[in-house]
Length: 191
Image (cartoon, rainbow, N blue to C red; front, side):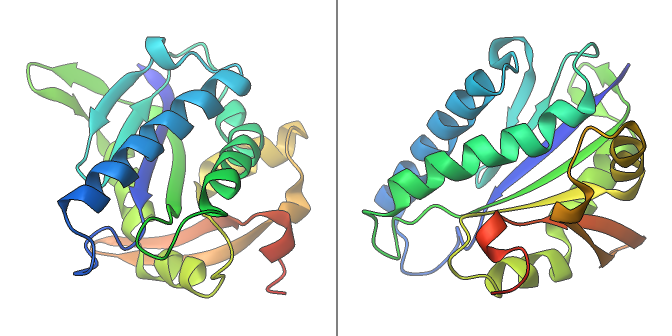
């Protein structure tokens, strides 16, 4: 089944200053914001396959959802929600997310989902350079990394603002390549 894959991770979830109460609050806000951003972006949250990842989530949209719908519209809506919540949060309660988006053919078995596109998605999400870019934009609440293949498809269709993305090198485990970084507009140029 060819579909859109979204991986989300809470930045610095394992910070030793964050206790179980902080973890519960961050997870609660993450899921609330994801569901609301999906609704606002007209993505069918309840029709998606989801897996909790402790400090994040895997979301797989139904095959009929265009992968580009999980890029600009979703990122902008999620950023607005995070900004609203985080303006009143201290360092421990501030929710910052990394989100990776990829598309490809996956399959289901008795234990969940599998396929090379999932491996690639999580290599993007966990890439040290991706984490560094979010760390270097301390006021940004969201960073999104889109796979090279998905970015090229979206750019060719004209459905995204190509200037909002910049290529970064991705090296993590056996993956070496390029991804396209999106940061909220105020932080995209490193200002």
